Image (cartoon, rainbow, N blue to C red):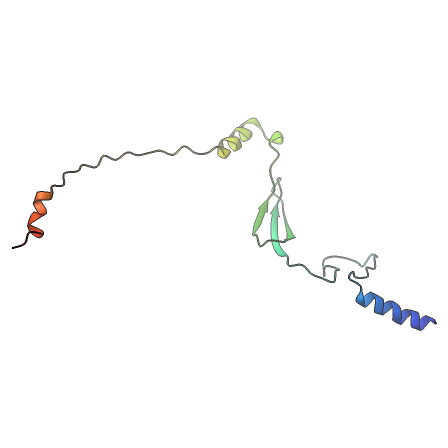
Length: 115
């Protein structure tokens, strides 16, 4: 086999393989495209980190915003207490209404009496 035959065979084998050939150098970035043969469906999503900074990421589910959890040990005592109170379930206020039942059936008997 000569060199040209090897090049043709190499390109055919690369064409049938499931992974893409990756040239790693200073010009390789993921800004322009993702370097793979099969693209999975991803959605642009805003990731909010615990310090408040935001990053645009690709996420496999269609979501608008994802918030990362805050480390409670780094908060002040007042902020920690406020966040822990917000986690607890709120107490529902029950209002009991006394409905006066002064309905008298005799007031409506004339409507169904046969004449």
